[in-house]
Image (cartoon, rainbow over all chains, first blue to last red):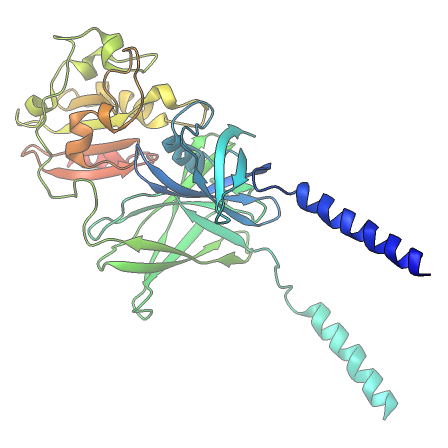
Length: 106
Length: 276
């Protein structure tokens, strides 16, 4: 009985460690949706919001060098106007901020 | 007693079934205008389903009631006009509201389909970032065909040469009305992007007495090492204080701005200013 308890505990600890390793903050995620808000100016986009098909809004800050189909980040406003969907590739920043690494047409 | 309870439950069920269904997912409005301020009366917005699907069309009439958030008794009502970006595919609504106080405004809208809608908020600034209606347009010298080849003046794949023959400072002081387009066609990578310049090009022959100019947002776009950054913004873009593109400014005979439009143009918006 004691051995069984130790074995179960060991398996649980292993599972927890494994789960921790699989969710590193640098993991790349993606969201598909429409652009519903853009703040900033022509040469410095501060943030933007994407609404996904489930009705969830996602706030992003652009990473240095982020492009929108190869165009500058200000092109996000064109997507807001046209309603064309985008696919945002992002990672979680250290403070929980979502950092957009790249944006493509979806 | 049990019979009465059962009857109540059954009646409640039927009553709820007969009442108007509550829409769990109302249509939402998304502001597409930028840099709105007191004195502007033009609001561009999109209508979306909560799933993100763009709605709207000439058959979906939209009406708007706008109120300052801190003065909800003040209400301005107006019908919105559908502006297609790609016919039958996507578009926006434009509505004219006299935004007469700065602050947050609540926009309520109804759609002729009868679907539920959620209101949305817009911020109206005391002063816009860019040149306001009534202000003098900055008379900045801009590059022309007299100095440069057309490929150095525009990224428009089908440029109208007459839009690059006159410097902005000359146009603003020659006693004629002017229509000035600020845009970067090169970055319009989708078919729905950037129809403003084409719309203005279509007006040129209708108004031979008006100066029509297209100004690229960035300079040096054909040079090695070019980047669309603040070091390459055209001086006229900086002077006009533009924080987004595309923009169209209509300037009267005295050099004062009589209209400012961002995003898309509805039929007749500019023409009405040029005919006055």
